[in-house]
Length: 240
Image 1 (cartoon, one colour):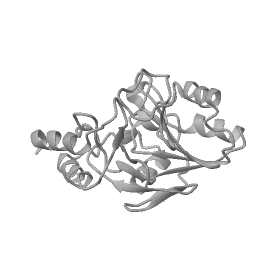
Image 2 (cartoon, helix red, strand yellow; image 1 turned 90 degrees about the vertical axis):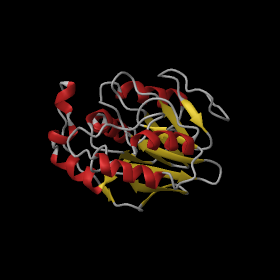
Image 3 (cartoon, rainbow, N blue to C red; image 1 turned 60 degrees about the vertical axis):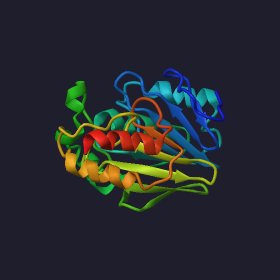
């Protein structure tokens, strides 16, 4: 399904194309949303869900040909929670079996947590599952850029929901997109009462996000954010 503007995200399992580079899959059940950004022979996958439904997402990509011709993929996690990282290993293996080079990326704080398999922060036990630690190839800092083909996505470190929470900002000359993870949703923000959460840091992160020009905010769960500044103003009004 291709749309030229976003009016309403369809239900889960229906891929939504946000021209010219991005595809969104709504997360099933407890899964995060899963995003695919592609340029030429390179792709970026943002978050992977719990791992329960990874085969559904890859099946859609395969059916629609979204990865045809892709030779390299970066899997980026917006933060440490299991509903965003649980599919890392199976998805990575699936990509490798297709002959695609796979690199994992995250903010350096999230990367350390994933490499340790620190379930105090990852919280796989809350889903009755176990997270298997894995190497994170690209340990990023605030301001670093992920290069996908000709695109450069800037990492914005936005602690608050977790210590490693980060957003990715893409301005491809046509559309300005902020992938917000669980830092910011439509009408609300990520909770701060879980390990490494910090409400004061979240407020600071929201202040920083308000400085960006954004056409679409694409969050870790739920619907898109079309009125970026209005959404932030409303939230900060009751949060601050």
